[in-house]
Image (cartoon, rainbow, N blue to C red):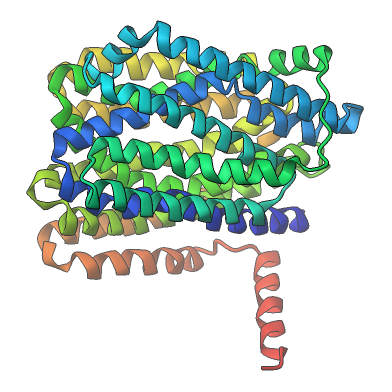
Length: 487
């Protein structure tokens, strides 16, 4: 089991580097956006990104996920690689044709849903960004399926540099505003995907097969409404805020959400990227329950430690760069991070359902969280605004995670790590509650308090006896090997 966990760790670290490059531009560009855009325009920018994500999820037809699953499992059962690649490519091109038709036929309702019927000039640019994102997503799916973490990192680095430079050029130097952001997104996704597609096309054999296409559709199509529902769980608050409180409220909420998304960047997404294909291999392992249970414990430690780190960094970002416009977003960062932390454990359990072709069950599971998020938002957000949005989001995410883990309970091994889970939660709450209490009394000490929280958390885990005897022995062995290494 140790080898499997070490393998997952190595791949996650490499993917972490790539995803940091890919997503870090969104964080690094916040000072630029906050200095150029008032909250109302920043809210519109966030709504355009939500629109792009929604359309990408719909018209990619979950084919990147399907490719990963079929490559890791079904190719071993007789599906030819060239057939799988050719069929995926043909279905993807068909999806892009449907995307174009939908953008033309449903322009009015889509514009009303996301932008209250305004900004038609940006709608066409967003269409190009959607196509570019789908292409880049397919390339990423191919690299993940084959475990090519290094190439994934290189392409992500190229996208990072392009997105950063193009935003500075279009938004800062050319003064193009939201148009510049959308053009930057389009080019930053399209160019790396095109480069990889041209380089990888040489010698590639492709063949379409109708039987494989039907199998792919049976697997992937339930993932489309599931993905849309999962996305709506995250974005519905912004749509309600837009319609009931205006784009300025969306801007304040989005500022807090962008900071909370740092937790997704450093913790959730790297794990999901590696676990999305390695977890499929572990399902058939003789120690599957122990691997999943141990992984839950490690994820809890990493997730809560990241929570303390991101809370400190996010607080400083808003205070330093947010100016007076974005300071109201400060109290909303922590509850949004709780929701994203739930996403981490949702991915941990969800791989069991994916590996057993339970995509229809995944869709059914998502209905109750969807009702909580959308139904609760419709009732509460018109009256309570951002406060209601930040309460509903973690509740919906926690509900989805618990239901998914319950359906996967034969694999995930809930009862194997109870003691260590309780120790981890106790250490976190001691650090966070005491730290927040001191911060309220002496707010000028925020940096010192944040450093103390981050440092004390692992010390408390050690004091509580978190590490097992086997883990202590491994650490001693690793330490001695390091001392013996010649310098």
